[in-house]
Length: 283
Image (cartoon, rainbow, N blue to C red; front, side):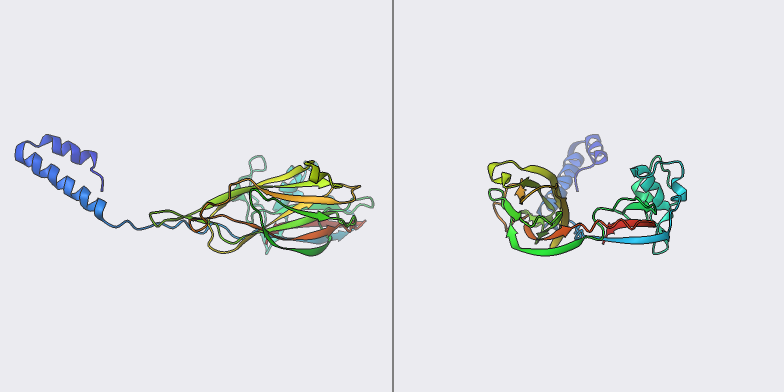
């Protein structure tokens, strides 16, 4: 162990042979510590695949006033939807604890993380909820690796498609150093779209810039939803790696692949005169 301030003070107080012997003792101890084999460290596995479940819940036939905990707030706002989480239960537990201060909601106030809702109150003219009740068709893209110098581009030409859900796969994410430690790693990438062939001329619009950081020795997946504009004849979707490729995959493992995507077609069901709530949560 390192020499402590108290040990230094004691050594200065000694004189003659006593001081020499004590200093020699401290030096031997430090040398023994230096020669002792170091135990490598391993960063805990911190990544779990992130995919979401969604469902629609019928609250009643006919119009309702709303959620009791959100009284006084404006319907359709983020503040209203957060307050309403106090009145919505998963497995008999409220998503947001009743004691939560709505003016200062903290992560610990949630019984469940990454839950979002979108309610409709049962009116005749209510709008549809985007992303719910949609038709999806999976498309395999042959687990294409995304390299910094080689973005992966896929073209959607079916004009009935309203968007896609991209799934990327990280086979493993970790770094090995010369001391035997196994540490976390990271990489970043962008998702961009271009309409009607414009992408090949550089006319891409970035819709997401993402960083994945942590450690996992196992395969890790994450989904990203991209909703399209209207009036197109084709859409190019491009994933670009921003982080440099690993120069030595044996020591730095941070490659990723575009595994597949789902083509999404909106059904645009409004369920008139039915009070419903759409719920999305981390599955």
